[in-house]
Length: 384
Ligand code: BMA
Image (cartoon, rainbow, N blue to C red; front, side, top):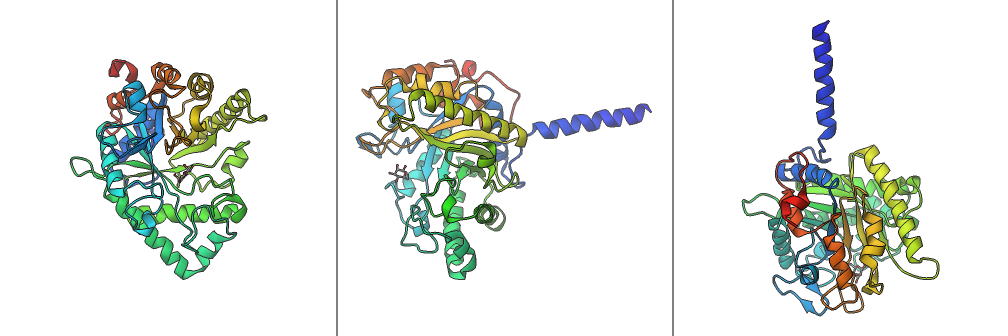
């Protein structure tokens, strides 16, 4: 009797340990990738990492100057997360669709990793059925044609081969593959990309997402990726999950949402609507044991000087989000993070100081790629 009881207790303990351990969908994920995934989960209890697209590559009025970052020039610290885009890698171009040289990108990824931060990748790829056309091609039935047309499929596979070699070429100081978040086929519940809602059925989208994961993971044996699923804004859980490829294909769930003030979208409605989406995401994340994030956001040109503490902070505070990524500082009329002298710079400093936000120094202290230790106070450890 006692023996049976002990076996039962041991079983319960084992099940709990396994459930608590967050494992990526790739059973062969590298050690650092597994560590990263468990640490993302752990760190999300302590604060939300701040991210910025192309942060090290350029900012408002500068380009490709080593060590620079608009964020750092305002708060004295790099973002915790930096986003990159692989668009045009598929064409074997040496620069991406926003002119970032892929050779530089590789070096920036290494820099972020060396600083203990996280890299994420989106991919504004061309249309493999009609490669002259961009991501923004609105041709109906592209996915269906892709699977029906051998030539188009060969093209898509050759593009994935480029992605696979690029991802494998990301190496840390000891030759280890740098783990990154890959967020393919994003904003698919909008219809502005060829993989979008009006151009494909839910099943077709899922088929393409699954194919993409399986090709990179199983065929090309890329083992340093965490996969993100990230539609645009949504209203209900059902809508969010309509095109979800399944728990075996997704590590991180997120969504993209931009603040575009107009008469219908005041600060209050934007905060309330977005917070609601975050709450739905939190529920889905808990149910499916997935890390969750706001994968793109921002107010273009940050015309509201207190946007950081009055709009973004109430959305992300005590949310369990892993990170929030602001879009790129592309041009003086198209930027989403402040730079010195920008109207929201001083408010951004308060946002930085808030205990709920995590930047470069804090993630460095959290050791994202090391064995997942029990929760520690990242803020305290970083000395901020
Ligand atoms: C959009 C804009 C474009 C850019 C694209 C891909 O939101 O920033 O200028 O080319 O993202 O990065």
